[in-house]
Length: 393
Image (cartoon, rainbow, N blue to C red; front, side, top):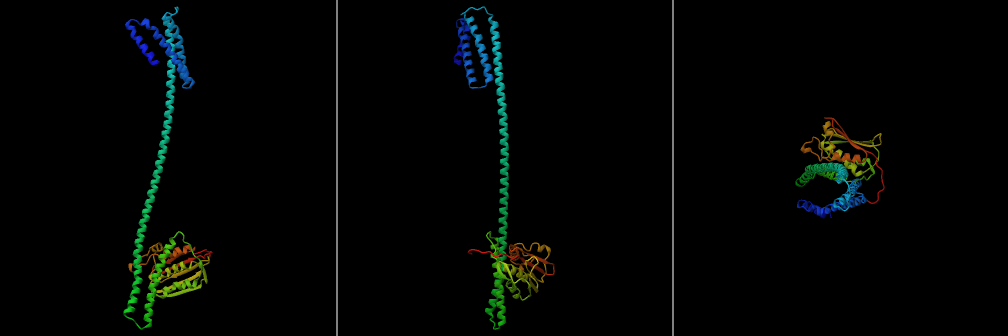
């Protein structure tokens, strides 16, 4: 309807220069009144729907005034009813009031839209700030996760590298360590085969060599197996009553087989029985004695057992060797550590480490006292264990 009214008014403008506007002037006046009616209906509808009530109330008032002022103007100009009115003044007053109210309505709408735009802008800035904060938190979280992952990967790589180095070192040492007793066995057996001797003492000496080498191999195998057992997460002790004298005699055999050493065994102050894991304690004590036999110079090896004032079993193994420096004593219990030994005397590197782990599992420890040139004394301490009833094996 508004488009149609606009076209009619444009035709009325064209009629002015053509000279027949007076005959169609009523169309223009009627179109203005119809436009006011349409505007009034739209404003009332907007107020019912509660859309910008202040703005549409002003617009409604403006169009009502414009409509009320337009009716007499149209009546007078069309000649329907002759009235003696000052039409120019009425038109000017009408246009002035209409324009003022219309401008106020438009200005109010602009202010309202500006406020809405500011609110939307503020909301958008807050959303943007929250988004930036959330993004920064996610970036920080991802950065921490990447750093943790990188650190974990680095630790895994370092652990794998250390494991590979330890395995390589392990195989080098076990290869050397197994060759030595096997060479002794082979040499003694070859000598007995090539030069059989009727002398009983010679045969006993060769048998002793073979037994000593076999005992060394057994000790190495036990250390390797115990090392794996100690690393198991399900590992636990199997305590039972053990004869202290049997533990000492088992380890003392290593000294008896050595032609370079003599044994001094002192166990008068030791208890008769002790509750412990007998298999582990035998290996730990044998490692200490074997260490003295291998590395100490010719002389006496003392094995002393007693019960301390704290109620612990103390077994000391002392030699008359060259002793150790404080720097070597600080690392001698590390895994695969051989101290300052040369290649021909190099040990397996597990004995002292296994002995200390066994002692600590029993609530004790292995300590060393030594001075350069005055030998070394290793002391194994064990706390008494409780015998628990086990179901199955």
